Image (cartoon, rainbow, N blue to C red; front, side):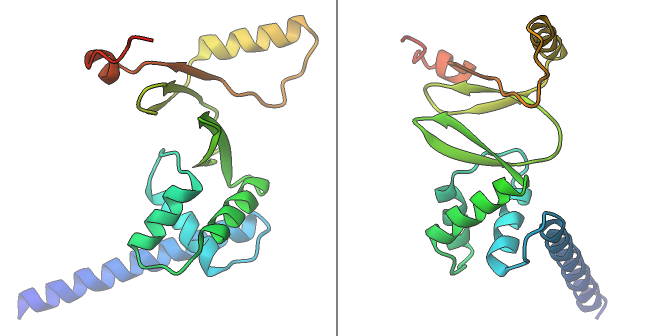
Length: 165
């Protein structure tokens, strides 16, 4: 009987954690000034569950399909655009003009993008940040925002001999 009770306790704990996450998602959507809807909660949950991954709308849609969610691709595009307007996500154009989205975690970072496989590496480099501030000051600019994306060939693709232009 002990195993059955232990299993029930684990199930209850899992449900409590899921409920807490669901409430956190709802709160984050409200704080962004958006109405809480099921598609918004589900899409935000997917973005938060994946850490630092960059998602296209199609990636989010595929995740929803795998979870048997009935949310259309047009809704995914609309929600991601609303999230961008509300500063919940940032949009990037890394490869072939396709938009990708990442959760806005409130900390600035730059990107390295492999031109062969599409791998994206996020990094923070204070030397680069300092140079950008110095350049802006030299020209009398006040930086409101900026992004730096460097394109190259990642170590894995170089090792495979695909690094030739």
